[in-house]
Length: 543
Ligand code: VG1
Ligand code: CO
View 1 (cartoon, protein in one colour):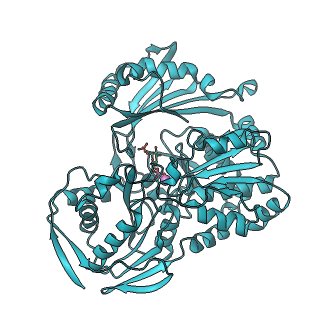
View 2 (view 1 turned 45 degrees about the vertical axis):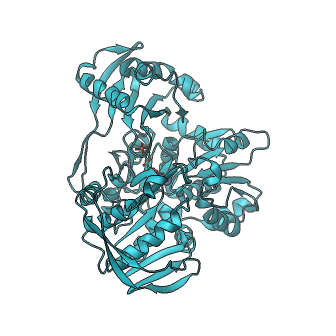
View 3 (view 1 turned 90 degrees about the vertical axis):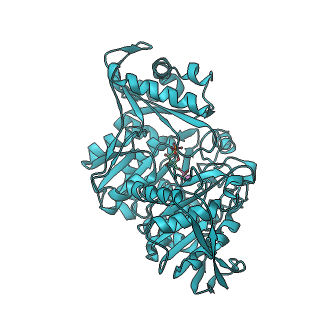
């Protein structure tokens, strides 16, 4: 086996976004595209020589082929060892756990997460650091800069490695260890939650439906929820990962997990419903006739955390991304712990978790997690809810009502305008940005603006500053509008409009969120000219 040096040229646009580099699969499959980016990962992080990496992905189209290329490149650059999930599969939280548990130097996760997969859909590559978390901004910037000056990459001339069998092997001088993707993760979950209590819940006749959406969590959920905790066989549906996620969109929200929503709002609804995304880091929680917004879920978990063994000693603090609702803020206030507000993207929670300043973190986009790994974790959130329901002996709806009664309710919705003309989307943002300082005092759709700014984050741990993290407008009466452009799309621009209003009046806690937010929605359009500038009468996705 010989090491080949392949001459190449920088490829434009290899800039990691909110969560790794995501492009259309055919783009990733172009000559040298993946290879350039992987070599830039080594070059931007001090080289691969002597390093140990974790490697795996969500099983989408091109996953295995990409993994084989990365193994050959790691071997050629002198990596000591790569720990790979069997058949190159690992959920994102399982990869994070393995990096930490095995004290690896880093890891590469092959996934475009909630984006569809397949030959004409999306692919992605994400680098995680030795703490198990997404590379922080300084590191992704160094990787991007390395893509801009790349002249060659190294690759071993070798046949594919057999990744179907668990055990040790070698590729050139590099060790390879193929591991069961589920078992270490399952051990971790078992160490955090009261499995006996959850087992007793299922034994009492409690019914659940977990929709794996043909993605990576199928094998994890089967092993943990059905085989270990005793949920009835068939509780986990769409459990076999497929390369194109069954042709679906593996994003766990009421739009894309429509089947689950229909089941949970039907006469024969089970007690508890949940879903996860392509790479297993997102979660959706839904009770009988009760959808839990991710922002509320974070607040409920924080308020009930001490019922779970791992968090029985209390929380050090909580953190949420800026567009996430303020529901958890009031729980933190009640608990007397810090609440941090970070930019969108899990990488911003890493320092707070490492420093022990936050225990629970969450994002409005169906991401919840804790200091047990350095990624958001879909199944973890599901088990957390099950543990809480088992302890409280209450339904999801009862838990929610009780929570709103104590803390008030943050009506919340996100409106997405997808594949908008990029220039139009940027013009909308630029124009609003230029008017921000003049907005306070003015009215829009009958509501008075009380504050308006562009969010910037000063990391309290390492002092780094991240600017341009979303435009936010505060309205009288506690309403809020946030606008930002997505950093995970692969086509045009996606405009996200986040809408929120706090309601504390006991008789007004169970309204339809779109109705409860109607004047805020109208104010957003009046302030930013959304329909005029995008040419869209309505958002593509409402969550
Ligand atoms: C979206 C979400 C963000 C999340 C990111 C990655 O980013 O809004 O909250 O962290 O996806 O999630 P953006 O830039 O498109 O708004 V995942 O499950 O793709 O790793
Ligand atoms: Co994901």
